[in-house]
Amino acid sequence: MKKIGIISRCDRDEVISFVKDIVKYLEQKAELLIETKTADRLGLNGTPIPEMRKRGADFVISLGGDGTVLRGIQEMNDPLPVLGINMGTIGFLVDVSPVDAFDVIDNVLSGFEVDERARLSVKINNELLPFATNEVVIITANPAKMLSYKISVDDAILEELRADGVVFATPTGSTAYAMSAGGPIIDPRVDGIVIVPLAPFKLSARPWVVPASSEIRIELTLPKKEAVVVIDGQYTRNIREEDRVFITKADKPARFVKTRKDGFYEKVRSKLA
Image 1 (cartoon, one colour):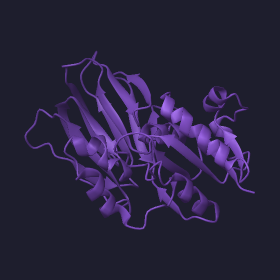
Image 2: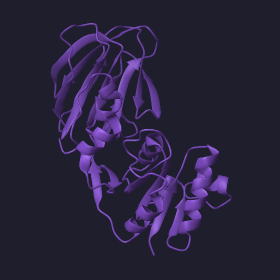
Image 3: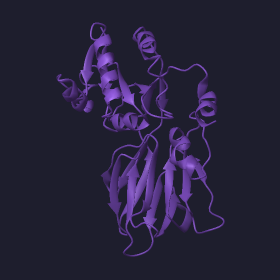
């Protein structure tokens, strides 16, 4: 019998009701490991997300939107495959509609393929922060005030400019904040990191795609200026001029249960039409 993790962080009544339906449907088909907050809502015993791999989970069902998926992955150092059921809006990381959920889950229980997606490792000085599946954003801590910063790639200066901030995205995250800021859409098979300035005060500032094997270093270049590092919209940390931010490709990828046969390009057309 397979072991399945269940994650849901949405408090909407319809989501909680659907989680109950999923749990009831699966309780005779698999051993369920329900994350703690969801289990509390259902009056059941819970399992912390970081413990699910240790407990032998085969994959995780995430009920919600992209944010729920990103929060779940961020709590796993070596992520389990995630099957996203879309209880939100567009949802690039949640392919399955509630109408199709039970049929898809039955198919997955009989076997599935895994789609691996690169993550980013982030350090401030020598402190390791949570990994990023979509993007790392460095943005001004003071609204309507620009940052001045320098970006180096493998010790070569890439850019020095003033801007509201900058986005460093994986190919998976290229369809999120980076795209909204004018960055390119990157096929997930491309092994690269997207760098997109946010509202740069420089006509020549353009997005870049650099090799994923690069070490990227970011420095603030004006004294007494503060910025905020935001990882996948879930984790925030303030930095100052004396801090150095380092971004590299993470050793462990994010993993997703493959459910679509039509591929990335069709997903982009259908989601962003």
